[in-house]
Image 1: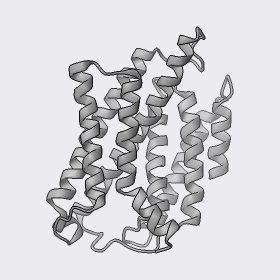
Image 2: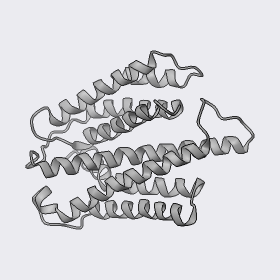
Image 3: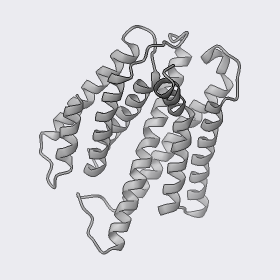
Length: 251
């Protein structure tokens, strides 16, 4: 699976990607999704863990870019995401989840997790999108032509903020469902742990970015910094904790 992703990523970096990539990439996505399902839900309960969570986020990111590329040429970004997805498959293989989430059959909990992962995936898309826009902007400032058939920067900018907007809505649902329905979702009353604090900080950063865009016309480097900051906080809220506990401490 990771080899197929890697081959797709390599072909997408070439000036004229082969037509076969168009059907091999969805095949890779389908196989990756099946692996995630088997690892996370194959035993009836939900088993997250660092590997499963990271792989799910990057699978959603790759899926989003594949769907987007049907109307907008984003081969460079798709190659980045395919490479990251390949790495996540290996991480999932070497970091299997062993602990099941209590009461994981509850619909409220499953809905909360789905919304959270979708928010993660879309905001990961936004980060990579912002990085690409910055690279293309520097390229234009040097007098170079746009490469890889990339769409105009204004088109990319509109796509970026649409992605952040949808991701922010999903993040709002995830954060506030976790805060206000903590006992129903997780079986414990609300506790302001580092997870919830980082998640709320991330929500404030993305909300501030959208407000700055609307009222002050923020764009370019400002948008990049705020987007990366918000996503780093979001990573620290969940994946950072899992990485420390499972990978570094082995718990």
